Length: 455
Image 1 (cartoon, rainbow, N blue to C red):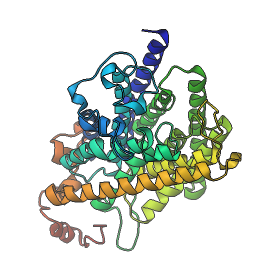
Image 2 (cartoon, one colour):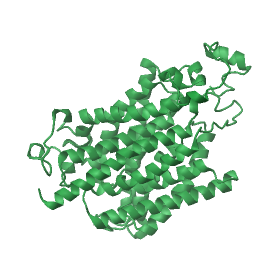
Image 3 (cartoon, rainbow, N blue to C red):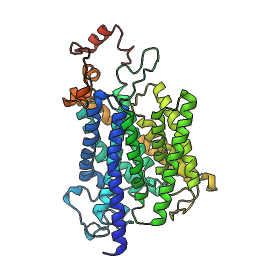
């Protein structure tokens, strides 16, 4: 095996391991931003979602995404479970089957694993947005459908030789393929689920529901920040020192800029430097730079990150005001900033800055050509994912139900769904809720209508 293949393979596998480690970051962020009574449920969902999405991607998702087919879906090389050639490059048995990813010379299984962890990341984005009221089994079913069909179809359009890639859309590491896809799916889930009990009142008041542990949420963001150094630079899928160094710098620069701008704007609007906004600001900058990280300069990354930090704060406030209850801000971070990052390619790209011929963005004399392709990509991917997710969520709701009972939501999903709690030693005497057998009983006991309580 030649030295270049060895080095490329080591880099891709290392980067994939860093992306896999991001699952811990998501688990910590989501559990920290939610209440203690739902901590076990959040952690369990973050464990199960990677397993179930891996199975779906292994079975059909990979083939739909990277198999040769038509501009809309892959049709060859399905059922990866049958096995694959583990030789260098693409392997004789699969030459011409996965041609869209033949540009990188690492072994086929290394390519597969790197793309697998990206699929898992997209699926886990949904978990935090639908937290504290979704049925565990319903979430599992949706995650499987997302991994086997929704995510791979958009991935094929952009990375698998599909119509958006042919159109000239660029998404280096997944602002749209991973983050916006997860964000659109999450938004559809929130709409079908509705807000948490007690979040909104009839007169429009917002009842804040603070997370139980910002310490672990902060650790989680640090883990995600670290993982992003595999997520973005790893998408070179080759040990190219210049490209890796450039992507590392643009990624980190956008993150730090977003941290500062999110902190500043939240300080101005809310009167205090809100830690939750600062944490989501970091993630917003990382999401926004994911598409353009290899196509823009470091100075442009600074601007992109700063804008993303402002956008995410305004977005969190906006969605709260229109009663889209997102406990962790996943829609604002991944959908809104994913869209912005994808469009940023069309604004800030500089042709061949790391060797990729993108053409110049609008701000560098390229006109509207690249921006138009990016905009079409955002609209096309968004329309498909949102509608498909809405259909899947609605079918799950009709067939097996999607939301836990009101009593279980009040008492916490840890006990109701899993039969244990994350903090048993801290349990104190609580009011009994066992008499609450239906919504009417809650309304009677509280003296308020369910509409008043946000139901």
